[in-house]
Image 1 (cartoon, rainbow, N blue to C red):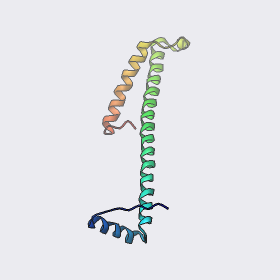
Image 2 (tube, helix red, strand yellow):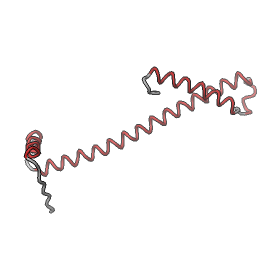
Image 3 (cartoon, rainbow, N blue to C red):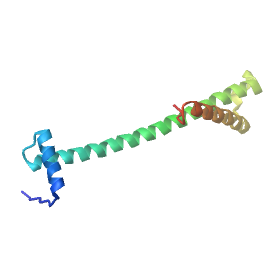
Image 4 (cartoon, one colour):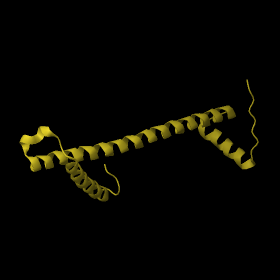
Length: 117
């Protein structure tokens, strides 16, 4: 078994004593283990938050791409007619659809105070 000693100020010792009373701990080891558990939980929660931020970015990107594709298809139908669908969609149609979707996204973000969703 290893020994772990800590020097602390009187104020820190009082805080430690208060924490022990509040949580019903009898040994400093219990307080230390509680702090370790909390530190591990914080790390896990930070990883979860980072994954959520990444997922939200991906959702925004996917929504934008779906909007662009929808605009491209509708513009292509009106531009070429429904019979010529199998020939592909030109780059100018994509750029024009992208501009329309960007405009809609910006308008939506203004309504939602900077959030796409």
